[in-house]
Image (cartoon, rainbow, N blue to C red):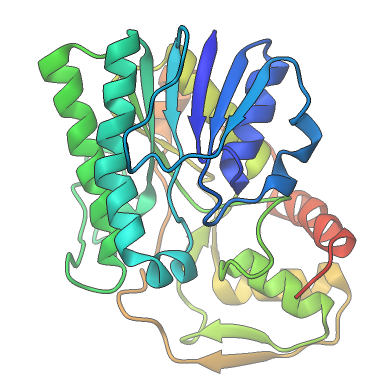
Amino acid sequence: MRIVVTGAAGFLGSHLTDALLEGDHDVVGIDNLITGSLSNIEHIREHPRFMFLQRDVSTYIAVDGPVDGVMHFASPASPIDYLQLPIQTLKVGSLGTHNCLGLAKAKGARFLLASTSEVYGDPQVHPQPESYWGHVNPIGPRGVYDEAKRFAEAMTMAYHRYHGLDTRIVRIFNTYGPRMRASDGRVVSNFIVQALKGEPLTIYGEGNQSRSFCYVDDEIEGIVRLFERGDEAPTNIGNPHEFTVRELADIVVRLTGTASQVTFESLPVDDPKQRRPDISRAKSLLDWEPTVSLEEGLLKTIDYFRRIQLP
């Protein structure tokens, strides 16, 4: 297949591109490099089945030749990014999704939307099944990302119902691994970078809020399976094992061997108190569940951060 991946120079997009190339597909990668980096795809820039286009999918996009799939991953995706880039986040979730759906429709291609567990907001149902409609503050500072993705899901389903487009929606839960940006503000990268620099680990609130962390290789395998054999309904892809932020900090301190302590700061507005996916649907539909333990994945991620220049 010839597959377009938007956000191809980002953390998840670059790993997805690698997986598709390993599966003998041709990939057209698109990225405007606002949060992505060419260093993430440097190893495949000369690959005979890879082509890179520096474009903003929030404007009109066109790809010459046949296209069999469009996988829309372009978006700021960490709190620091979408709080600093609120308008761009809203535009890529709305206009960008519309343009990518239009490309898929014009080419007769399958479309996959990278959505997020943020559509559940600060959930009142735990764990979160795909049937849960969410508890989101549309006008809070996080709303620019949450509502952009909720709109993107609605637009994707509209194209499926009205145009008969073959679509997929993946709801991605916290994912970590090599190629995360050291300064992206996510809890895993924050803790690892602070630990390696011997700085205190910053915990927001009391650290009792829980998250579920999925290693990137597991996440990408689930996404590829969804693209290949899924259906149009949203599907959670994440790790159902739940840890508090304080537990994560203790594990990172132990694995890095740092002498760092922890410090506490005020909890951000609308920060979810708990987040854990119900992956029953992914298990039954895709025969998928994560296999990499948190400690194993963290060791690989720590090794990556040891090898790069830290800010």
